[in-house]
Image 1: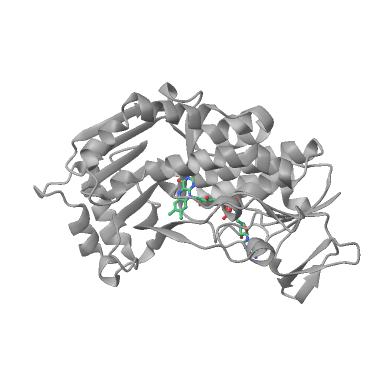
Image 2: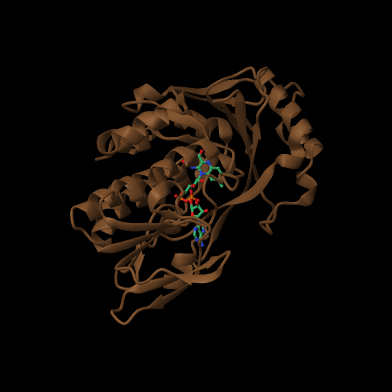
Length: 380
Ligand SMILES: Cc1cc2nc3c(=O)[nH]c(=O)nc-3n(C[C@H](O)[C@H](O)[C@H](O)COP(=O)(O)OP(=O)(O)OC[C@H]3O[C@@H](n4cnc5c(N)ncnc54)[C@H](O)[C@@H]3O)c2cc1C
């Protein structure tokens, strides 16, 4: 069986590595060693680490070595009042990780460099006489074809071209919140380390250290009814007003972040939180979708890349055993629905008029913690 993988991000790289020995070609839009399109920093959940530990122990070790452990999760108000303090080992078998995006892509792409054709952006889809899918790529040399594939895997992310070509452009549902991110690379004076969240009303800062002396900061705030991010909010003064507590005195961590926003506001990447419906395969199972291409979800529980890891690992296991796209759907879709639903429900405190204090305190109670255990541990 000849398998083509579109995109060597998280899911595509892991799938290609897990199918070593099979007739695999991966196609990636960016050049070799080019991690410039990667985002800033991210936290990857303990469930991804468990999937790697069970099925790809070398990649588990490489990820641990290139990252910091995510051992704690605390939630404060921006005046420093503590609402939640969770030890990840109480809900998981091992900590998650904190890592830079560029480093994650580097360590996932390196093992599959030999089977990857870089500088290939999927453009169109054709069929050969045997009914196999023939992807058409845009390259420096113009449009290029590499023959027919029995299975084409769309691991090309949130705006998957393969999904659009094979199943139509998916509808997008906006959550109604802006999410921005910033990587501060000279952060020696940062007064905190592990994963924290700080709320002022429904506006939230999220931050943690990543390797190399850097700190990742993400901000979230509710959007007006038209769903657009107002230009007036994209200034340091507006963000300072958004996160300054009513008594006017931010805690040391928030004061530090506000200083970084002042210095680096021009480098902030602004986006809107959105989901698309799950679609696992199309064209009678000849096109399979993994990661964001199949299941883009709200980032509230940090499960986007985490689920892309699970997707790559599980799809490799199923295909190695002779399974097809429907078998991958059977192995993934119920789990993905649970994670999407849970991520959406956990977003309550980001959306007005929900009460942040009551909503966060509920996350320290058994029903939420039990589901967190299910999320982090029920991986096979
Ligand atoms: C603000 C924000 C914060 C986030 N924080 C977290 C977090 O903390 N933890 C977490 O787990 N997730 C987080 N996510 C989600 C995470 O970014 C995604 O879920 C994850 O990257 C999906 O992995 P993937 O393998 O599906 O796709 P990607 O990692 O996006 O990889 C797609 C690959 O396909 C390539 N490609 C795209 N189009 C084409 C084409 N036409 N032809 C060829 N190649 C193509 C791209 O270059 C890329 O290499 C966050 C997302 C956002 C927006």
